Image (cartoon, rainbow, N blue to C red; front, side, top):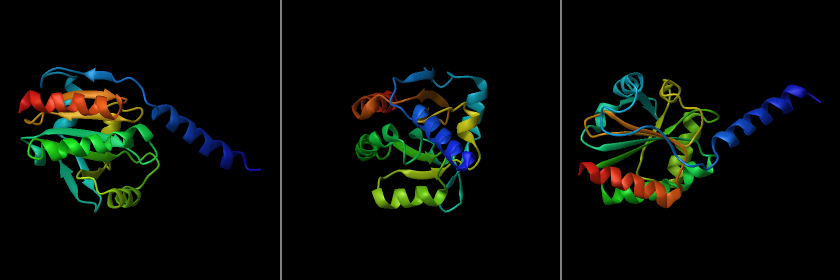
Length: 179
């Protein structure tokens, strides 16, 4: 039996399950547009992702909306649990709220994320973290959410999930704060 063939996948799965467990949200940065570390604010100001066709997408394309950058992967149950709630908010606030569903790339490729997006049809902007924004923000597990205010400034970073209803209510309150 090849030790590496069994041990390494088991280790990856264990780490993923620990990072992806539903947990109480830990807020890393809260408050207005000046909240958060200067380093995190700079990462957000310069954040670039790739769409699932390989084109660069920067956050300034979403100025004027509250943006939720939701780092996820398809095997993360708590990540997927809140997608219908965020879809509801996109429907309620199409001109005020944008959901960027950013695949971290821990175990999935852009092609895997594209297949998921096509299968599920949520009205999100589907992106891939080609340039390591998740790591630059200190992400250690998913769900990992970053809220960006309508002026493009870091508003809040959250680790974990409140569940579908909790994330819906929390995000709706943030939207209503601005609009």
